[in-house]
Image (cartoon, rainbow, N blue to C red; front, side, top):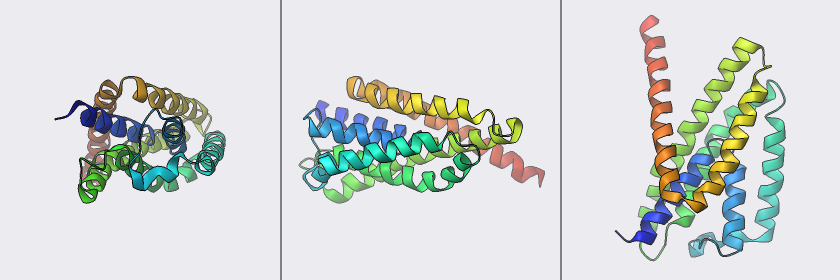
Length: 193
């Protein structure tokens, strides 16, 4: 496998995983990186690097970050953030894969399976953690959860450009761990009913 293809796949997975923490921060990071030539987007996705897209993602990122500090609004946001995270993860992973090396159906399939599923799993895990925090602290502990997610989204997005393969591995391991934890809780709940 070509090293640049592996790097692009890893970068797509890592940025997508960060979309599970915050939807718009990795989208903004990807748009800025593409605009300044740090990464190259597939030709059908160059709209992501435009100034209107950057302004839109920056505005959405600020609104998203701020809204997660409002108790109980954060829980409501999680209901819409899960499908948005899957969509953002799919778009990020698909846009970074080189179009000349992969046919569009394969590129979008990899984007959905690798990017969308990772983003969705992480978002479900953080949503469950926030719900647990709301239940046990009456919402007071949610600010800590939100801050941790913000830090993970920003630092993870930045590190994805510097060490994409390592970040992809770390975030995939975290995703698998979160999926096992969520699956275990769901099975225990089903067995107790």
